[in-house]
Amino acid sequence: MENFAIMNVQQTRDPNKRFLIVQVNKIKLDKWYEGIRIKRDPGKAYVYQWINEKAESFREAWNHSRCRHCYHWHVCGHEIKTHCAQFDHDFQCEQL
Picture 1 (cartoon, helix red, strand yellow):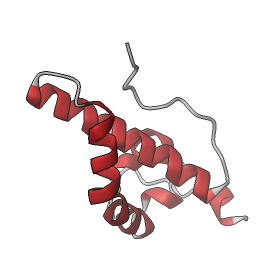
Picture 2 (picture 1 turned 120 degrees about the vertical axis):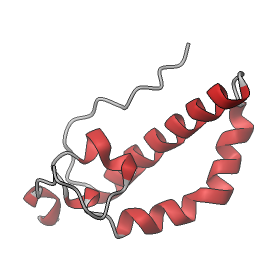
Picture 3 (picture 1 turned 45 degrees about the vertical axis):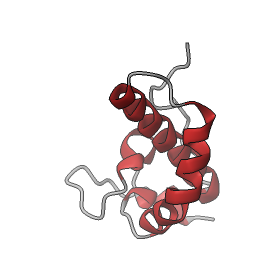
């Protein structure tokens, strides 16, 4: 059975790697929610559909979110928030 939990990752300074980890987590969560809604696994077709319909807007939202500069990006970055009470600036991501 596939694990849909948020990936447990070490902190990375690479902003592209951060984005890809967050995007994969978001796809897994959305696929899981869709599976609950339709009461079956939506399969790979759902992933392709997500990429075609949502990937561009997700990237845009990520680029404008506080999450990409937050120390906790790997925990809740898939929520792509512009305001967050738990925001903790991660200065390591600025040092590239």
